Length: 143
Ligand SMILES: [Zn+2]
Ligand SMILES: [Zn+2]
Image (cartoon, rainbow, N blue to C red; front, side, top):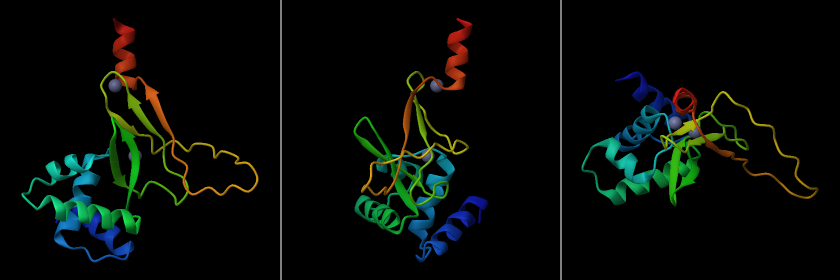
């Protein structure tokens, strides 16, 4: 078993679900990607002819348990990622590069929490930014 697969099994167990083959392979694909993926991309990365309905159902169950969460929406596609880098209420920021179109997980950045008006209760704070990633910013600087 690869290190990533072992990690996937561990995350599933911690999340209180049985590490079935399809769940492990899905979580493994998402961990391997290292960036949020749409469900089509997840299916592609899993590289098996598994029934799409089964895959979507598996994804849904992983989201329900909180092992995976909806990270952001890009071009009207919902992207998902494993939630091991996030706390219950605070997700790491995502940076979308307008030049190379990568979605970058800023897991090292801890955003400040927003002070909500009295009476409001925070369920989850997500932050999404757009601009140039370091590689593209550098390339632009050179030309
Ligand atoms: Zn870029
Ligand atoms: Zn992320």
